[in-house]
Figure 1 (tube, rainbow, N blue to C red):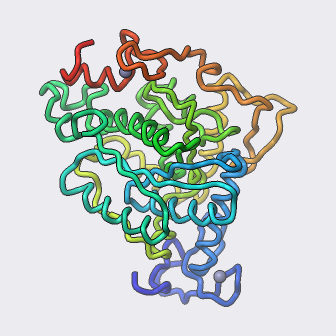
Figure 2 (cartoon, helix red, strand yellow; figure 1 turned 90 degrees about the horizontal axis):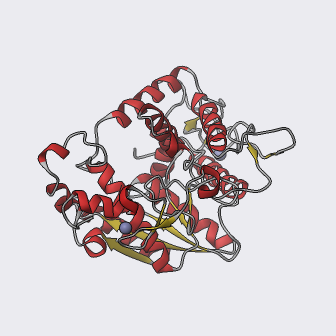
Length: 372
Ligand SMILES: [Zn+2]
Ligand SMILES: [Zn+2]
């Protein structure tokens, strides 16, 4: 990956001479989008990603004029690419960004990423704060995993490493966003992540969670907070929701981003990996199938909100120009019929889990940290 010419990913087969960029005509094509046939040089490719993200942000009204956005940066390719693009946007538009990083407490893994994020923020001149599980919840992730009963370590609902980590991360991000005074939290979830999550929810019977799967923003349906804690404020936004993961990988390499490549040691090699490979194999034979599936996901999310598209709704255009937006967006709690209340133990706003306690308190109770 030393020169742009060697970065030809997804393009014509090996041995074919690289041609000129379809956009500028002078640069050497380095990336070909199979679903559109367009070949771009690295400069034009990076520009195309920035423009596409700006269109997504505008389409879903993700960022408020004069707003403050907390960009959640883990140190992986998606979040560092997101930081790069949000920083560029904040230079040209009227909003500010802060970077928040959640430190789960995974020795030897998070340390490298924290160093990368700190360096990038320093070079961009962006504020950066780290929030550790240990400080927020009195246990690190590794400590929490060690506290599980042996029978809960494999497959028990809600007690997988990714499930515990996700529950704590959602709360940590809410706390961090409030701490920096942000009215929106941007995460690096890409189109592939959205499709995988949708299929996981479908296959596991968690259809309630689908209602929470929107891209975020004022017209983008609900925040993706299926953990029961309030996502109403600050809003969760996903500016990369219409970008293929493969394009973010190329953007990160083409931009020289120093991202952490080592996967999380607790990464569940379960169904998400299988679904990821399944979708990639479909896409390789049927270019653009992820785009059309995402348009379907958006329609289903709206249906889950009781907002089935009817004639007269404003056409706003999804990845394929097919989505509709209701005139009056409903809040998640209104539209799914779930009443929001406060956790009877910690007071956090939630949709009320077992015994009226939130998902974080429920997790801590199951780990024996607190009494119900
Ligand atoms: Zn070009
Ligand atoms: Zn609670």
